[in-house]
Image 1 (cartoon, rainbow, N blue to C red):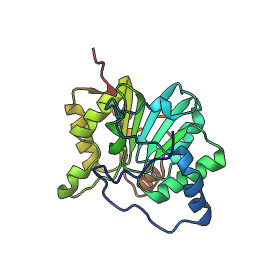
Image 2: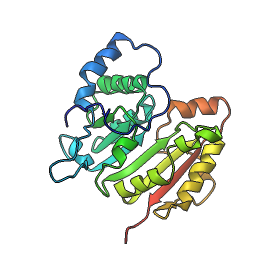
Image 3: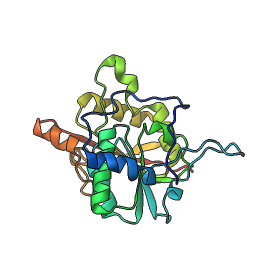
Image 4: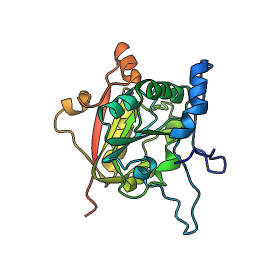
Length: 241
């Protein structure tokens, strides 16, 4: 798909900063030259009024499955998953420019071809995806927004879960990880209350231990370094029958 237009005419839900330290020249070049080739397009509604996006159509060759990561940070997890699963298409959303530049450096260095990027809030695209089009979704160490007055900014919530339930295939996994106790309780409560998701944990280790096929992120490593205990919540999209 072609390079994304800035969604200035769409309602923005993004909170927090867009950029940190100044970028090095190489990363500036990657943002200028490589990002447009990998950007996810957000088309306006066509003549039929259909604004939907088919995720598998974002790749030159239709992948066996499409996995979606919300807020990929520096891209460590996303890049490693893409390398480990070359037949799967990956869509990553991240509004922080430095994080996108970091992922682009990994894509360029490893010659990764199965990643597409939305440099913006994931909620801008979630409601546009065709029904039952995602095979797996990751929400790994999102901003916990710990203050009570900011709780509504948390990504996991009824409206977002409705969008995820629409876009996910029956049996698709939603993987949520956090080291913040408040966010863990918030996410678990919201997911347990939603009729379209089922918690897959059978024992305590199922949520205390990161899945073996899920590479760590730098946020997890920082959390462990300061003694925090991450939780890994795996939910399955229930059958539509």
